[in-house]
Image (cartoon, rainbow, N blue to C red):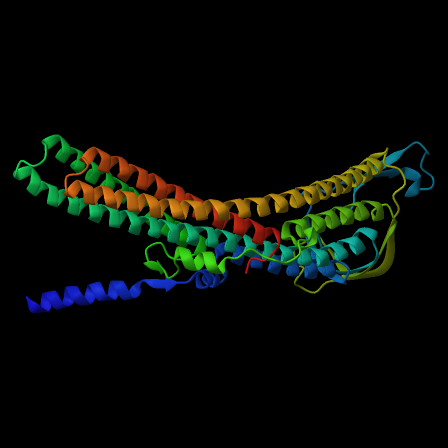
Length: 440
């Protein structure tokens, strides 16, 4: 029996020890290391780097080997004028014959080199710039992950604070009910008043269950945003008070150029400009060189691996392609690319105005949230004091249980408003930090 108890105790201790405790900063650092979104963003950068190599290779020498084998089970018929064979034959007489051999084989080695191609030049520039675009995208992905982790962490801390508060109310209400049962047994209070207190206790326990569920759900949300295993335990070390102290909004000067979304939009505009440039450069002539050496063999029997002649041929040459007339296709393509650039410019201008508006709005929301939270904090303390006084008066018979229930409902409503004010303040601070590109 003692061994069983010891094993159960050790098992419980191991579960407790397995729960990792995180501060907000530690949760952010964990997310940066384990978020699948960030991992995929890094893989996109790796792909972009390989794309640079792929594009560069297009302009380097290309060597290809080729071979072919043909079995003519029905040789083609050739027709020529009879006097080609016999000068004395009539001019209008034709003769036919089957030309070639039953089996043909060839093997060739060809090397090509791109000398000039406008689209290739632009493509190489785009592929290099695309790595910069992906690097900025990594930073934006990190910012999004950190914002999500911060929000989930703050929600969990607030949910835990709310649960602790409701736990204390359940304890106070439960103690009151137990004491009032003695008065009921002595006939010093009515059954209706007792029922009212029981109802208040059940309401408090129902709120406790809801608050506990909120803690569980926000815990799962935090694990998801961090990339933390859902089947592993996790704890948070921060409190609402400590988060309020450390999450002070940025005092840096606001600049739209620092916003990561704005930077991505500018880089997208650059990509559209490169696309326009590529369309224009595609109208330039292209030039490439080719060198080829090969062998051909002809047999009436399949004896290529036996002694026989293989005839070699070698050549080099240049190939130029000059676009001349496309019935307006190229002009339409270029105009479309110009429109895309213009759309990007318009979107950037609109986003500049939006960011300026959002920054002013975020500052206003932050100031308002601070005032509301202070008022709600005082309101909760006052409501709690009123409720506790009502409980004391109920115990000495100065007020009835209905009034206690009313004060309880008032307290719960004040607490809910306080938690909502705290989360509103957290969100306002976080939005301002994100606008200032100050998410760390």
